Length: 144
Ligand code: ATP
Ligand code: MG
Image (cartoon, rainbow, N blue to C red; front, top):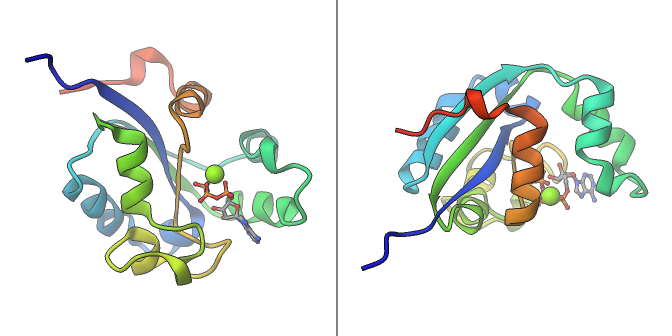
């Protein structure tokens, strides 16, 4: 049998969640889905970092508010590893709008609004690699 192909994806616990002291509750939901943390750090995004991280949305009307929100308090950035990790992570996060997210997902449980939706997750394997490199050096990643 060929071993399962492990993927890595980037997770961010957003300012609305760090502010409410629910980092642990969110990590519990991530770990319960079978994903494993292989890197983690707490930081406060600069305006430049937030603008660059969300550059794909630069032309959208919500971009400036999104950048203000993402820089409004510390975040936790982390790498999750597992089989099919990108899709599995998006599934446990739930839909972008918490009001539309399935019961039991992180956004349904904790999200406050379309903007303050508690978590970010990479949306493709290619973007996962780019986003991981945005925050982490190879020497900061420690799989079990
Ligand atoms: P993320 O990239 O944060 O994981 P997502 O991939 O589900 O979320 P995107 O379309 O990439 O959703 O939007 C990025 C983020 O911008 C959303 O998570 C949300 O915080 C914010 N956002 C998206 N659409 C809107 C909107 N119409 N109004 C306000 N904020 C929005
Ligand atoms: Mg996105």
